Length: 256
Ligand SMILES: [Zn+2]
Ligand SMILES: [Zn+2]
Image (cartoon, rainbow, N blue to C red; front, side, top):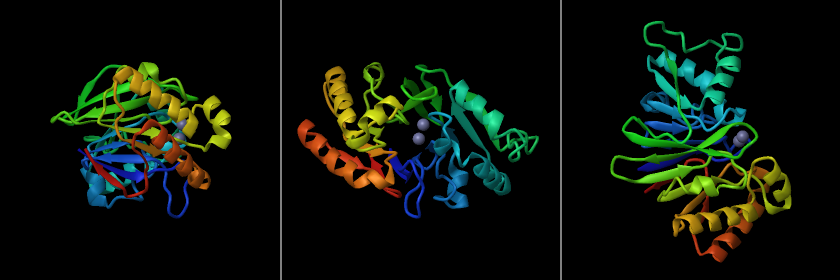
């Protein structure tokens, strides 16, 4: 399984993009920066898009992706929990801000929605996809994606502390988890449904207690202005827990 980080941040700058992951070219998770990162041919290869939650930085590209695929004669299926799909239908695909590509073209619409039930695994494009609820300001899920050959990645999406229940349901070979702020803002992070390095440390300790091991960890959703502090603090956490923690970068790829 190959995981490509199209975007790895919570704010956009010239060299930093909003969070999006691409698995084996066919399965995308979150839509912060799909279209500015991929050629049309690459966009057309994506068959499924999983959304963790409705926040703008995770869904922004959907109308533009709709237009791009419509012009390119391709279609994509979007999967998420009901609150996320409802918010998208109300605000992004209502024919008010932009075309509702769920209706165009009539015969084979460019975008279509499939509802996922939390904690219920589904087979999507040959992968077993398990949506697991996490704590955030709006209903949100992380996804464990398991390939046919048994390789698994878990991506939390945006989440605050308290992942013990989540850890009981997953056993990935790679953990992609958000670390939005540095420890200077840990209190804000925890109360607003995000993580900082000291909070991550507690969650990783909890993972190890539940699962008996720690997979390599990749941090995403960093605030660009705090990234140096976050990197230094994560290096200390990695040393203390004797595990690997990498900060994702735009364009980075990992094979598991
Ligand atoms: Zn969010
Ligand atoms: Zn976010």
